[in-house]
Picture 1 (cartoon, one colour):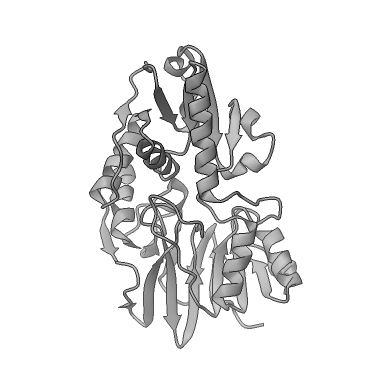
Picture 2 (picture 1 turned 90 degrees about the vertical axis):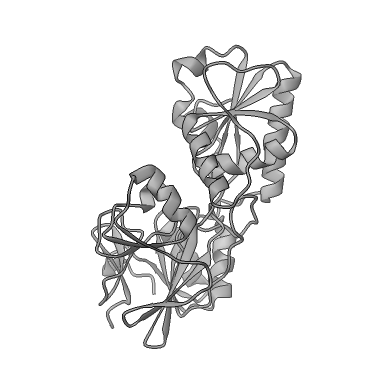
Length: 326
């Protein structure tokens, strides 16, 4: 069997016979960074990313070495490789990468979402021959409601709390999910407070060209009619636990599992996700036209099995050859 064009080395994805890595969690000579979530970034010698991702990376890592910031849909060359970034729809600045080498089109999605959002560029499906696709929710049980319906459910939770004179607390990841919620609730006229990091990231969104409604920093108190937005790990801090009549909802794709609200010590769990669900992943693969699929992260084995059942050559990239599902 011919050597794969992409390979899994030391917990990271590498383009075979090249210097290029994809979202490597360890420092590399050259890595494409699809977006600025902590599990996709590192202080590489050279980075390829969108401008928004570079700004968000700098907020987390401080000054970076060499960053090549690239607009979407504009091809450029790195040695013998022709590269193009396409929007991924996950968070602001998130990107997919298409590599063309010797006529072969190799696409890497990173985290993606095909449902239109309020704060991320709409995703494209990238036509390709070889596809490396993130499978975070690659299991049939993960099917999400439309993004608009989930946001309406969030707003309904908040307004129900306020009608009962309760303090609504929304638990959402600081980068991406929080800005989506701020944008929706702010546009509905609600008064918002948030953790410092959420506020700092929201200001970066504004500088990167994504307008954000006003949000005030949380300093331990919550006034009548105000909504508090926090990262999940901040939910049980003393200042939050002192709030009277508080009621919390965690916002995550994992909410399709009934145990989620208990894991996050929340009163409710709402399936608002910035990832593709199972059906979207299958749709992406089919529309890409790829005939060779590598699934990575999350539920990569169930997704690969379903693709094989549909007659598409697929396997988890990090599985040994004895586990190939061709």
